[in-house]
Length: 318
Image 1: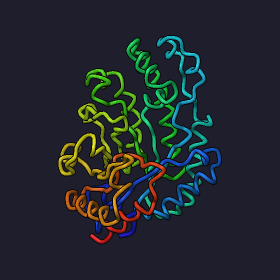
Image 2: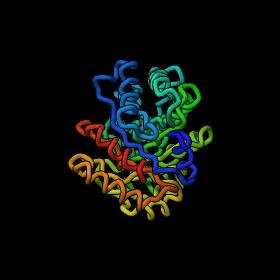
Image 3: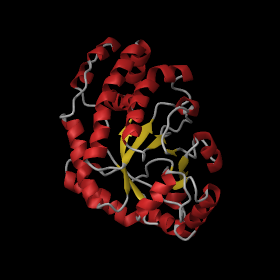
């Protein structure tokens, strides 16, 4: 199998010749303003680590840039939000930059582009405290805002896949921490816009992954996402479900993860032999069907990429 064949088989839940590996970092801020440097940084990471596929970053475009968000006074002001539209630099910039990354990858691997859920796009613009204040002040106004953002994200998803050439999206779902919303609140206030984007992405690509993000250090209320569907779920093993087979059973699809992504953990501090040993143990747990080896979330800048390559080289021997 080549890299594309291996990863597509894994997404379909088929047995692979060896377990695919994909870990990722964010692109340094110094490269955000230059599309060529940004694209080369992503391509260089692919070459240096030799991972089986790429999670492409959206650095510099995480927050939804409506100017109205800067003048919000009450939750009712959210009703004035309108989509940015397909020609807005927020959308066109991501599509054009991703084209350059895909061109540099030259068909060597599957690529998934990072898309945050609508509520996170808004939160990254106004911050968690204000997001929570507004949603509790008027949940329906926040639902309107998220629906508006979802329309832009659907346009972005289509452009990233059909125009830029990515195979699918890496859909980062957040805000599901056990101490943030009740299940009913999440399902009523957050899920509709989340699902609008995800269901649209699934309608145009069969190679999408959902990332159950746990970067806040608080476990997720996983039940709020039980109706979210994609061929692959990337989950936080060290926050949510340690046992890989249990994760497969709960999510009902191929699962992606294994290593702790946090600084100071094995991937950062272990010897090569220790990392190879953990790689073998994870593959023994996950097997060669329905498992992709990765980390809980993005890796920090200080991690030398050769350490990712140690995992890749070990996986190819098993």
